[in-house]
Amino acid sequence: MPPRWQEGRCRYRHHLRIFVKKMKLPGYGTLILIALFLGFAPFYPEPHLVGKIRMLLSGTLVRPLDIFDLFWHTWPFALLACRLVLDFRGKSAAPS
Image (cartoon, rainbow, N blue to C red):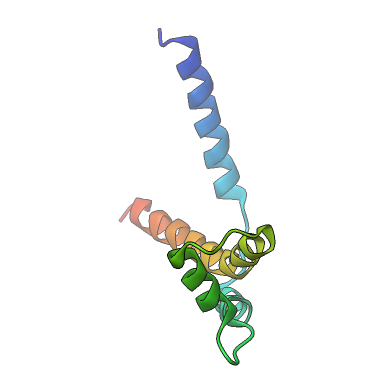
């Protein structure tokens, strides 16, 4: 019999798998448009995301507003990546 702490961990994984299966993500067209417009806005003179990544790499991303701004302009790309991973996992796990 597995230790009690491992039982809870297995239940957690089971609930996470159920959540991921039931999670409904928008279509690729919607996600790509959101990622392009929100991720790269404002377009002139420099996209916000490019500036925030430059600040992160140089070590000047310290203000809470800048950190939130980096998160705000990055989440559409993370959601698109999540959609891609879930779709490719589903296709590779499907029986041939």
